[in-house]
Amino acid sequence: MTQDKEQMTNLQERGYLLTEQVNSNSLNLDQISSLELVDLFNSEDQKAVAAVAAAKAQLAQAIDSTAERLRHGGRLFYIGAGTSGRLGVLDAAECPPTFCTPPELVQGIIAGGAGALVRSSEDLEDRAQDGEAAIAQRHITQLDVVVGITAGGTTPFVHGALNAARQRGAMTIFIACVPAEQVSFEADVDIRLLTGPEVIAGSTRLKAGTATKLALNTLSTGVMVKLGKVYGNRMVDVAVTNQKLRDRALRILQDLTGVNRQAASSLLERSGNWVKLALLMHWTGLEKQEGDQLLSEHQGNLRAAVANYNNIKQP
Image (tube, rainbow, N blue to C red; front, side):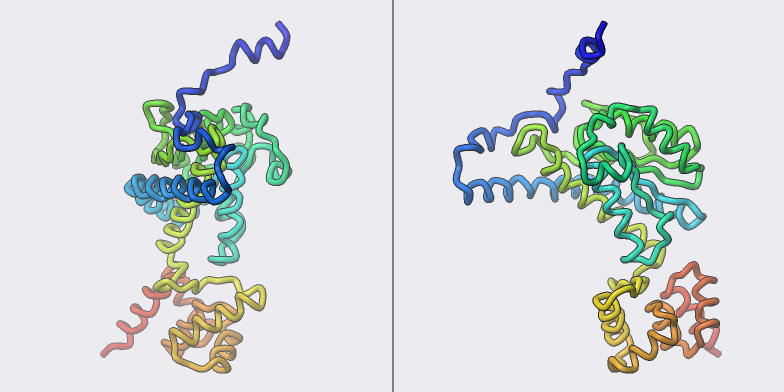
């Protein structure tokens, strides 16, 4: 049997999947005006927000469980193919500048590697063994969290990775845009983002991709909040690496301390360009080394560190 015939014999019918079904609202997509097209997309995109809201309990569970693992030295991995993989890599890449995390703390894995970020390599999603190998290469342990992202729920690359991660004792999170009765998968947290049929049938870079981006934003940001990477809603662990971020750092210091811009700049310099430490130094009067030690004792949680200092100082 030739390879093409073998592939046809083994080809799975996927038309039953929610993400592959035909959207009755866009049957005349090629006949409507541009304004009508924009209105249609906008209407359909509302379903992405609703889908995330419907999965709020599972997302909250994922946030709490992931934060707990990371507190004890674990790492967070996203793994996917095509659009799903690119979204995972994007979310991981944005954590270091936003929360000053080391690059290894949150990592994105895409089928086909870095080249697949800019060039289609969707054929590689069919290789479950590649997903298994990706887990082995990164020495996944029981402390780690692996998030498998697959809009249609059937991607072998993701299944292989998650199964390998479970065998190593890692916590697993499954994100798909089809209901569990269509595609079941055993994971510690099962997140279903049911956005319905796409405007272009099967094009899951649309609503499914939008819902996935929203969910990943919520997951990673929620985890970082739990890890003390923000104070209130301020980015106090921002990496001060360019003029825009330095300006943001100074504005945070000015807003939260009431000092002028010059004093904020001086405070930032004394802290080694670490907004969180600068705030602690201002509020406690501690110098850099002492403040750094206090933050370390409270796992970087500024609010807890300040509260502890104030309690100790009280007679």
